[in-house]
Amino acid sequence: MENYLPSEQHTSQRYNAELEALRATVLTMGGIVERQCRQALEALVSGDEELARTVAKSDYEVNKLELDISALCTDILARRQPAARDLRMVVAIIRMASNLERIGDEAAKVGRMAAKLADDREKQSFYGEPVHLGEGVSAMLRGALDSFARLDVDAAIEVIARDHEIDREFKTLTRLLMTHMMEQPQRVKNMLRVNSCARALERIGDHAVNLCEEVIYLVEGNDVRHLSLEEVRQRHST
Amino acid sequence: MMERVQQTDTAGIGDVKRPLDIREHVERADYQTIGEPFSGDAKMTARNVNVYYDEKQAITNVSLDIGRNEVIAMIGPSGCGKSTFLRTLNRMNDIIPACRVEGEFALDGEDIYGADQDTVLLRARVGMVFQKPNPFPKSIYENVAYGPRIHGLAHNKAELDEIVEDSLRRASLFNEVKDQLDKPGTGLSGGQQQRLCIARAIAVSPEVILMDEPCSALDPIATARIEELIDELRENYTIAIVTHSMQQAARVSQRTAYFHMGKLIEVGETKQIFTMPKHELTENYITGRFG
Picture (tube, each protein chain N blue to C red):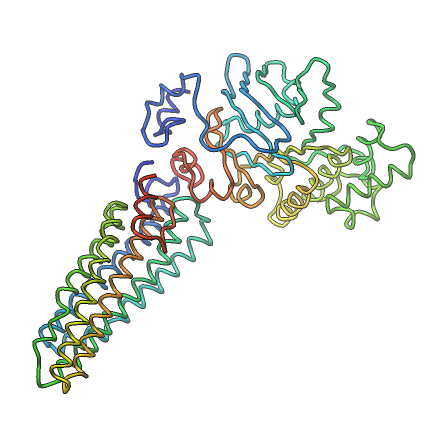
């Protein structure tokens, strides 16, 4: 089938507009959480306390959009009784919105940790340890949102494939922090905070995977949640 | 006609992925129905059906099974051939002089277009409910009793009374009309009239009930009652329903067949058709694209 957008080509122009508004709201929400993640990471690395506090408090924007998306979806379900691709889009977006909201929560968590770490006078080099992990996760999130914008299953699978790397990096980072803790037991508290940040980033990667799974469901109708990467690829090729 | 096709279609029949020149598939005699047109336990079978009104071909090479005790919904835009196909199943097209039907049709394996087939008997076995409720201008009782009487299903008044009551009960109408059985059937509300017509169809103990947009003249409450009734009737009967309401098809049927320009494009489990149709034409129709 043509990979046209779900919001195109309905006889009812208003229906097109409603689906387009829904899609646009998800992309806006995605843009905001992407920015939150970037800023959280920046605050962590630079020790910019103000930026950290801004991020920590900015999840209200995302929360509001989650409610907006819920309302739009309920409205479309009630008044349009969508079927096939349209139905899958609405169902996928309901789940995507809750994943995006959680990404916002995780980013806020990094913001809070970053604020506490920035508050600490003795800034340490290990605060920047999660930066590589964070960049990887940000790229995954961007890839997930792109795959949604373009309804690109191949791109979605590529993002899912990257999660393994993120998990590995998180484990490596945890080991590294444990080594630091043994070396500098007086800094354990802050190291645990850094580890919490890494954990939050790793969770964002998981949510990005969930977003990609929804893109695959939307486009192909395959529910690939809880499947291994190999199984996802296999379903796609058949 | 060809021009209209070119404007409205984007994909070829029998070809899910590759857009096909529409002229090619309209002129092509063979095409592939997507999905599973055959049933493991078929009550009726139709094979290689072609129907013509004079020179105009209304149905092209359709093969489809109606499974035992299933509700199959036939959907598609106006003029797609779904009603014509439905009417071939009890030879209602015989009464249209210009209509020519080709193909093999069987009810429980028995050829229904055979030379020795009694069409009156066939239409008792394969009953029909129409779009507009059409009770006889007689009493409620007589509307239901007429069929069993001419088919000799009752030997005396008591038996006939029993058939009438039982049919009205099965059509969920008895309680509403039990005190006015001698009143004219035409005096009932639209929804009640339609249930009376269903009772009339049931009274001759059919095996299959064909319904041609049975709810299109009814309000939502009457529609819900008919749909509830269809669900109950499925236990004892096989039902084929033609409907313009896709939500109705989604609600009442187990299988759905999508017709387009006289061709059976796709058939499958209703759940699959409405969440993950395989053919682009099906998808476009059920999602309301391209008018």
